[in-house]
Amino acid sequence: MTSVVKGRTGKISWKEIKRQKVLLLWSLVFVIYGFIFCYLPLAGWLMAFENYKPKEGFFHSQFIGLGKFKQLFIDDGFLRVIRNTLAMGVINLVVTFVAAIVFAILLNELKSRGGKKVVQTISYLPHFLSWIIVTGILHDALAGTGIVNDILLRLHVLKEPLNFFAHPKYFWGIVAFANVWKETGWNAIIYLAAIVAIDTNLYEAAAIDGAGRWARIKYITLPGIKPTIIILLLMNAGNVLNAGFEVQYLLGNGLVQSVSQTIDIYVLKWGISQGDYSLGTAAGVFKSVVSIVIILIANGMAKRAGEERLF
Image (cartoon, rainbow, N blue to C red; front, side, top):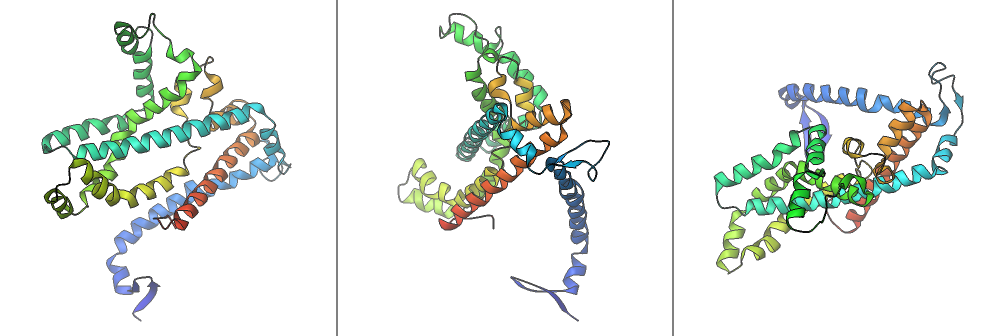
């Protein structure tokens, strides 16, 4: 008995399976891990349709159907939370996405290999910092006696120090800046890899034809990394409602609460602090379902446009 599995590329033999057994075993470990920690917890969604009481458990709590979802959408606070989450999610997606692409292209244009490695290393180091450290740096920099106020006062942009964390209109911009500073270097790695994969003969031919740097970027680099851009955009589109938790929670305060609260903070507030596990679960289910719908819509649009897609 030779062939046992048929795929798109042909037949896979038992001999091939035995040869790849180590990889298959490691893959099985991750499949089991994903099933235990990603799929089994979905059983907890049952709480969203019950008036869940810890003492009564899943099977004895009162079933109320969509009651908790109705409670969510008649709550002005939750509607405001949706607005905040969507706004910060879209801003973070656009800003970090564009910043990573631009940074990767600019870094690729550096002629010095040593300089390129130094800049790349420095740029992705913030990714390894915890949000506690990042928000601490932001608090110090944007404080009344911080470096930002000091520079603005010296340039006569401000007449007196400004408390950035006391004005809601600055909060979304601060969060976007924090995400860009922390993740741009790390996110640019995959674009750099895609740029490196482009045939160098194309650049040489373009240079011989008289194309400048901008022309080579426009007609070779960007089209070359377009499939990567689209795939990552589709994947990140589903994370629009994952606008964040740590940075908003750590930077937020009573003065900016109207713009700093996200769905994740709402879940923490009601699901843990207030003990209403059903309401917190309902909010989490809503976020997950909307994220799936966004991915399906984005993937469908890419498919109709003839572009790269997830499935």
